[in-house]
Amino acid sequence: MHSQERGDVLAHVSGNLRRLRQAAGLSQAALAKASGISRRMIVSLEGGDANISLSSLDKLAAAIGVGFVDLVRDPARAPSAVINEVTWRGAQAESIAVLLGSAPAATEAQMWLWSLGPGERYDAEPDPAGWHEMIFVTEGTLRLELSGSAKDYEAGGFAVYGTDQSYAYANAGPGTVRFVRNVVS
Image 1 (cartoon, rainbow, N blue to C red):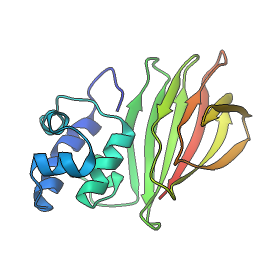
Image 2: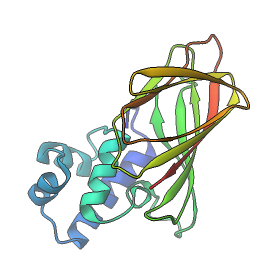
Image 3: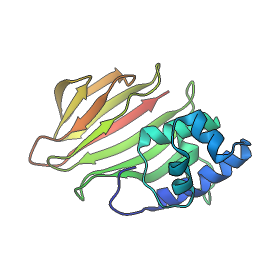
């Protein structure tokens, strides 16, 4: 998670990662091997001293055998479909992603609320085959880049696409862009 400041979600990731890894009977070294994430990064995450990309959190969750939401959920709150946690911040104050909720799917479905300030972008790593996203732009114009090809979506526009390719969200305009993002895996 790219962030200028450590938020509560990283504290949740820290404790949840340690608890879930131990419950799965995995050492830090075994989790590193299974996920492709370095042991040093896992040690830093569990210590609450590191930021991590959303796709790397997906890899850790898959290696443990849990969903992404299990890593970011506040463990003090009763389990529910509502998450409502900030999971990404950009360089500008108005650039933020909030995981609103999750529902079961083949693996899970997630609903996010994103905003990007002027000039901000989020570059994503490809997800496993079979993963998809649906976006709906509510304000401004979102530039969606899929495998190097870009298309702009104005407020009211939407797209559905597979995320087993490189993709990015960008705001090339002067105002804030807001959109809803649904992830289905």
